[in-house]
Every structure is written in structure tokens, then in C-alpha cells.
Amino acid sequence: MKIRTLILPLIAVLLLGGVLVSRYRASAADNAEKPLELTFPGINGKKLKLADYRGKVVIVDVWATWCGYCVREMPELVSFQKEAEEKKLPVQIIGISVDRYEKDMKAFVKKEKITYPIAMGNEKSLKPFGRISGIPVKFILNKKGVIVDKIIGATDKESLQKRVEEYVKEK
Image (tube, rainbow, N blue to C red):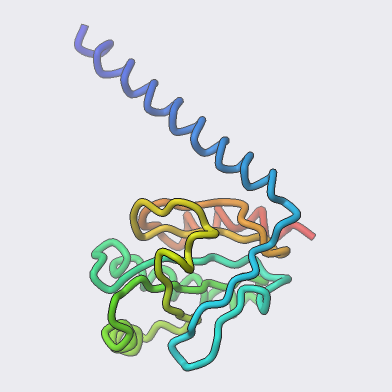
């Protein structure tokens, strides 16, 4: 009897999760002809334009220095990007920080030796990505600049590689 009361809610949660993922992918497919044309203020003083990365699979990581999960996954993301560059894969991580103070974020990036591009973002500039209810969250853009996937929460290098693999193979 106890097993039934545990298994039925678990099955319901798994089914609901599958529906949410398939609905997100369907809505991304509906916008297949609409690449994101966004520009963010980069921390190096230059503008970071998503359009400059066409031809690559782009992982937009929305994060902050005060987010423990974000901070813990940073070494994984740095390692992922380094490995992609070594293998000459058409993949680029872009970090969009939602920190309030740019100087705190710049100090963090320097201390943690984050090598991929970082920019500042806010609720308004991130609106084209849809509702963001928490961080970290990663949006995967295909080589055309269209959102094709979303990862809610922290991830590791291997999981990210599996998630991105199919988009790297696309023409």
C-alpha cells in the first residue's frame, strides 16, 4: 500500500515534466525562423551580439555571483568550453550575469578565471528568452541563433555535452 502511494505521485510528476519539456521544444520549433537578435553590454567594454556567433551552437548561461549553484557549476562550464575549443567544435558558452553590481561580477570572473564571454543582463534584456523563474538557467541556440533547448538548474560537463551534441551535428 505504501509503495502505491509513493509511485503514483512520482509517475504523475514524471509525466508532467515530459509534457513541459515537449511543450517548450514545440514552442521553440514554432519560432524556427526567428533567430535572436540581442546585444548585451560585455564586461570588457565591448557589446556582445548573439548574431556574431551564428554558425555555432550557443549556450547562454544566465547566472549571478550570489547564486551558489551558479558558482559551483562554473568550473564545469569553463572546462566544457576549453574542451570544445581544443576539439574545434562549433560551440560557444556566453554568460549573462544578473548581478546588480558589475564590479562584483568582474572581480568574480577574474578570480575564477572564466574564459568565455560574459555580459550583463537584466529582466528587460532577457525578456526575449521567456519567463526565467530562477537561476542558473541555460538556453541552447542552434547554429541559426534560434532557441532549441533550455536547461533549468545547474549541470555538469558530461550532461551538457550530451544535450548539445545533436545541435552540433546539424547543418
